[in-house]
Image 1: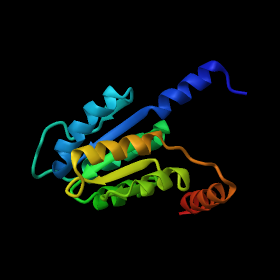
Image 2 (image 1 turned 90 degrees about the vertical axis):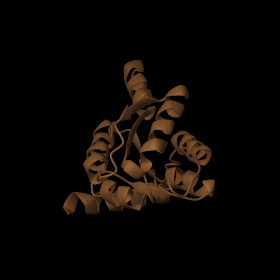
Image 3 (image 1 turned 135 degrees about the vertical axis):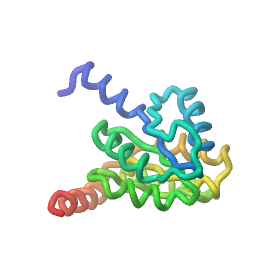
Length: 164
């Protein structure tokens, strides 16, 4: 049985969001940072801290994904397409990153409900700021159903991950 202290720690982790981007996602990351903080989330910005047109997303995304995995938190990473950010994040053990670059919010819900995704990678070139905010909020507030078939599938992935 978990005491109140354990429940509070879990609640804080559940509200923790790690952000990262590259130069193409920098402006949207900055906008999401303020928006999510205003919604009561504890936001950790893993960079970049300033705009640099020559930066490389793995330099920010991989450490941010490691942080997500170590905290048991959620991460939102933003790039031009979001694809490279998801590729890099998914190299980190325990990360389940999905890409969002359209207006289909059902994809967002399913990624949490069915796959327990812990990183949302946004293609900033393909979404508006308001859509990114709606998608991020929906994703962060949707939960894993813990249905047996979904748990079973995630266990299979975790077993593979631990062996390779």
